[in-house]
Amino acid sequence: MNEKAAVHKGLKLADVTLSYYAVIPDHPRALLIIVHGLSEHSGRYRKLQEELAEDEFASWAYDQRGFGKSTGDRTYVADYNDFLSDLKHVIAMVKQTYPALPLVIIGHSLGGLVAATFCAKQASEANGLILSALAYDVYPLPRMLRFLAMALNRLCPKRLIRYPSTGENLSHDPEIVRAFRADPLVQSAGTPRFYHEFFKMNRYLHNHADQIRLPTLILQGTDDTTVFPEGAQRLHDAIQSEKKHLIFYDRFYHEPFNEIGRERVLSDMIGWLNTLISDSREGIIPKKR
Image 1 (cartoon, rainbow, N blue to C red):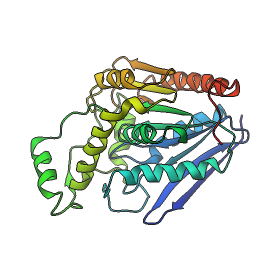
Image 2: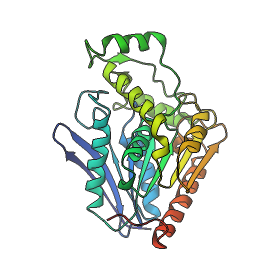
Image 3: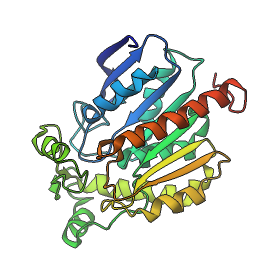
């Protein structure tokens, strides 16, 4: 078994401290940064990190500001660029460990939107991008929630507005659903400013997806009711990368990494990462300095 070290720490920035959990094997072949989705936190990716370490991938999963164990007002961001800046700081921290190794960002749902938008603006910061159920084409908010978000954005931007978050549409695995419901770090409310900035970031990505030029893997369940599965195809077509690949998983819900049959997802992702590493060694994908 590959020996590995697990570390839980916080990255102190000017206005927040980002909690992160790192799993680092003795001889890593690549560096992975995991960006979680809405409602959740990095702890839900612990099993995935352990599995990736078995294949010699070092990973850092962090809580975005206002989520999980990171500081900041809950589900709040003053400007969506703060999410991108946080990711940039995490990348800088991770690169200090093994600067010669390829670095890949893995983003799920909201985290996928953050990661993809970041790469559209700063493609040179990473060697590869993996997007799971990216929040690209999303189902509209309930009418009342949408009205409140618009009306309160200027008056009470940090006021929490509850939204349905039962977990039933995440996975067919009842254990995943039960764990989600019982998780004290799962959130079920958002702020008006968050919704405003979320849709502003979403519009930016729609207008600039063609700026993503790095190798990209997109993972999408066909029965996802949180995002439109067809959006994965539209994003795939918009990305201007010679190395892009989209995989649909039949009847999967919103969380491919937590679905029944997730072994296929893990195998597909590791296979793609192995190809990326091979291409990097052969000079097809230049290593970052």
